[in-house]
Image 1 (cartoon, rainbow, N blue to C red):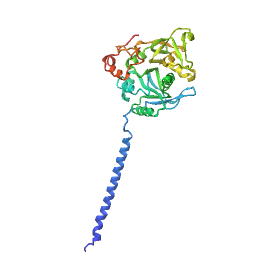
Image 2 (cartoon, helix red, strand yellow):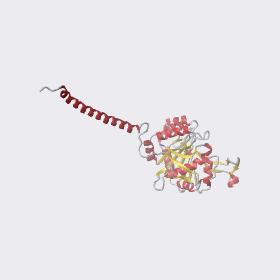
Image 3 (cartoon, helix red, strand yellow):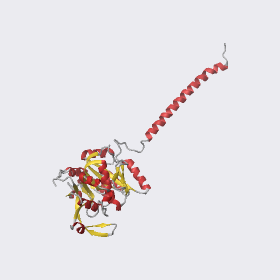
Image 4 (cartoon, helix red, strand yellow):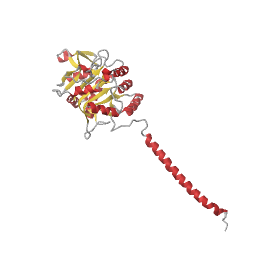
Length: 342
């Protein structure tokens, strides 16, 4: 019996339809796999591989006068503070992008693994400390830098030179909330620092639990910015001079910072200069003033801890360039760390 044309074409047509369905299903599945892979990979584009949790946090200034608010990354009562021997807050600003770039190319690691290794080797944790601004362009640029390096503490306080005493108090309160540290170090972003030597200095045994450590100087007067007149400290304190640390770097022991944290914000009198303000506060406390000239050397030496152009500049003159130049010198970056009995 001869097959009709209709029956002859029926079998190939059925086979073709099945093949088409299988191919279509394969294409749909493969396309879904590709889109899924791209979507997952895209989440990581532009970000460095990181170990552990985020290091950068935002800290809220309590405008009611109580201190640092419990928000924006500050631990609450159920969270433990990160334990270190010393916490170093590098004070920086929106105009200091170049300084931070130079620092990350010299003594401060630019990657999370490097920061972790430095902390393990020295017992010191490092973060840049900056406030806020109403300039959205600058804030956007800062957010990109935070996303790239993740090495900031962001304070909810206006970043302005005239507000440095407020920023400094906010820094110490935030640092105390975040880190369980024996010393809290305020450092500027325009000094060359040897973290290994700073670690040895902070680790020394001290008879005083309340220590104010820095390169100390005598200051006879200060200015009240509101009243626009000069007040001799001899009139206020019965003494012609008082000691306070130079601003580029100084450290407060945990007991001293705990006293600052316990006081209300509006109980502090703020003066125009941040370093003088801190020194005046220390006069009201039973602190031991520890002077160490290794924190303010103009050149790298076998014992220098912090190098800056004292007294020519409050920090390094032209820091972006000078930081890189100093780091190339073996006496700065590669000389052995010596123990000191001073």
